[in-house]
Length: 318
Image (cartoon, rainbow, N blue to C red):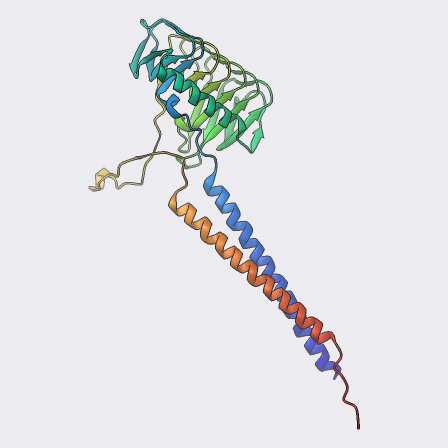
């Protein structure tokens, strides 16, 4: 009898352990599904609205010295002064001085600024970004943010990789400094939200969209693959070149050398791809199902354990 009792106890213990194992596996699937969903989503681009068509936008005035070349519109609102064009040239877009277009762009800039400033989770960075290679994400400096030398932004093969930099006060790049993109990172998905004013140093090479609360100064010879947008103050230019940060997420296409037909690149909206969403949903649903099964299995094992642990009633003699 003792051996039979031990056998039953052993089987119950095995069921209980199996139940706990099933529960652990289910919880693991739930966590894995959640992590994959988060990984699939990442950071969405900062929506610029109508401000996206502007290379330079100011609150009070735009001034230019020398033969700057601007690809994109130049505007100011509520101020009216835009000086230095010519010799500066707007090669695409138009000049908007205190008109309805500039007003709407400033409204959209405010929305974009507040969005970028509120993005989380933010990794703390040192006051100088020089010499670092950064992955996609949000980076924050409590006060001023600077750049001496080169900072490399690595998209890790993702054409939708987004980089957001949050400077608590100023953004200052040194002379001849540069922002370099690698791993598929694109200029239109790089955003710099500045708590006061930005200064881009002489002959520096800058990438991304500056969203400055107050003002911005682009010093002599600096080039910008992106935009310099200031909410409340002035934007000052000096012999600069602005190029438009057009982003595309190109689908793989056969090589022309093999006679294949290339596919058309599609605009990068920052939205989740169908495959990533589907994977996350399926894994999440599977995790929930396994979680429920694991709970049921564990509950049944406990009930059986309790029942088997009770002594059987003895039969009496009449």
